[in-house]
Length: 243
Length: 68
Image 1: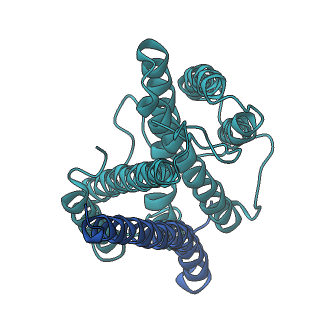
Image 2: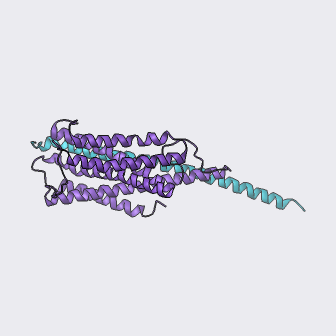
Image 3: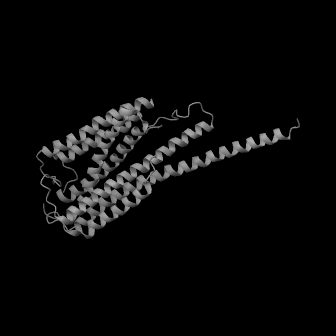
């Protein structure tokens, strides 16, 4: 169900990521203000954007689960949020490295962009423990969907609030007027963003396929062992146990 | 914001890209470990099915051998 198109998608995402990194180091000019350290921007910003979009996608799949009751949507939501959390860690770490190089500090607490991203990250860090705390699979999926929807709605609201706030030091990359990037930088940034988005979709499908195979295998094992109900989960888990 | 010279900025840029690469590699390694567990369990299931088939064949042969 989830494995369709995985091979071309993997090839395309690897090609695009390699292409993006080539553009970053061999095509995009050094920033006049920040110099070479600005190259981190081509990694940090796409990772942060894709992570936030992944959180929103988790909420969208949560809505679809509540509307249809299809367990596949719960699995999609879970994997999207799980992957977005990993990308959020990457965004926080790469951002901190950039801040150290550009500002001389690893973290600035009075900067709305940084603190709001950290709040979103910490909010989603509660998602897995929340799922794990609920034993009944039906209730677990329903509660997780509600959490994903509420937290997913918080992400764009938070983003808008940060844009409205007076930023002191964090640069604004994308703006209504098109930002201040010259053509070569803009192209490199867009290729990086597309590569990161494609990588996210590839890893998302990869994990979905693995989880589905695992579930089918478990069900088959219990059927062979003449278990009455092959879908009863064997152990408590934060991840969905059935489709 | 004064630009860092290339010698000073290089390690920061390298660190940022390496962190990202390391995270992706760790993720892929965990996925690979899960995949190998699935492959191992699939092997166990194949063995169970083979044993069950062999037992069924044996039983059928015994039934055929018994004179009516």
